[in-house]
Amino acid sequence: MGRAVWLCGEVNLLLSHAMTEHPHNPLQGMTLEAILTILVDRHGWETLAQRINVRCFTSDPSIKSSLTFLRKTPWARQKVEAWYLYDLRRGYK
Image (cartoon, rainbow, N blue to C red; front, top):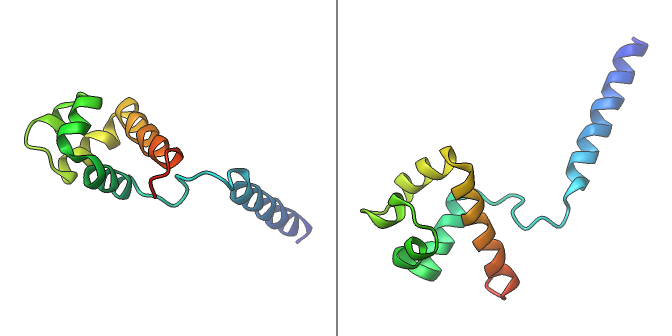
């Protein structure tokens, strides 16, 4: 019984730490789909393709195909997320 209480306390401590670890992260709670949709609405597919040269933005672009690619390609996803954060710093909401 004592071990179970200790483990519950440990889990609660870890959860509490995880929730407060990045309290000012603007990506927290944002889905990749939401980020991509915002960027497409603001800038359009052509501008996305110019800044991040990947086929899913240049050839018959769609949210669905782009999400599939970005979820499998960490470097491209990082570029999309970085662009979104750049826009936030520039004052886009």
